[in-house]
Amino acid sequence: MSSPQSAVTTDAESARRTAEARAAVTASLAAVGSSVDNDMRTRAADLHRNSEGITKQEKDLAKATTALAKESAQWQKLADTSTKKLNEIGDIQNWAEMLERDMLVLEETLRLADGKAAPDSASGTVG
Image (cartoon, rainbow, N blue to C red; front, side, top):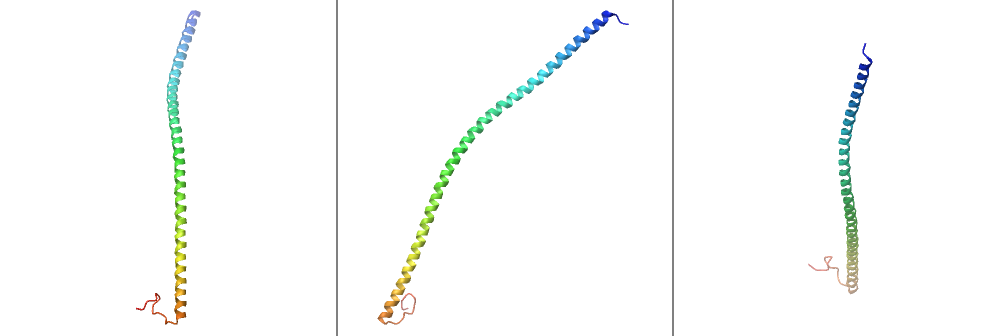
């Protein structure tokens, strides 16, 4: 069998190897962790920069939306005014047609009162 001294040496050697293996695993894990940490820090920095850009875009979009709403209100006001004016023109046309009919009735009444014969055309001209 082996001597007690060689058992102590083997135990010491085994402990040394275990410590070296543990140190190697710890170093390897630290390197992996450092690599992942660097990636995460880079991503976090990118996200932060992107967040600032998105915030600026949100503000710009809000300003543009407000301006568009204001312009839309102006266009709606113009459309409402134009519609009102077109309705007024239609009212004037109806009024003119009513006046024309009244004048024709008046003309016919005067013709009948004077005892004249009916004209050959609707316009009252003899042609």
